[in-house]
Length: 135
Image (cartoon, rainbow, N blue to C red):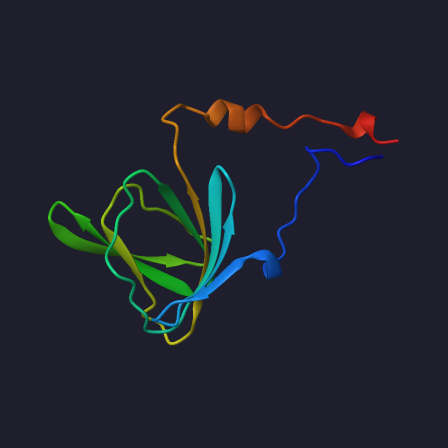
């Protein structure tokens, strides 16, 4: 068997762009032409700055600990706690993430520029059985 351009690609942690922000937040950036993945460690007590995304869609999966998202809704600040294995989609909201616990929280961020086209059927139907191709 030979590998081609459709073979797997592994980005090792050593290949990530690693940054420690002034708040102590550690981020490993994995950058691709059509999307980004960030692995974040948010220390206990850290509060991010308020921000929003104009074109990006940002999705967060908490992998350990918990974070709080604060967001502006109808002119008022609302908040929700996001726990391990929860998925947060911030859309175009003005928001910030906080770690109000006494332990670090880890989460993965998936960022991409949405096309505005419905893709859910493609997502459901894209898996092709290849058992007969392996000999």
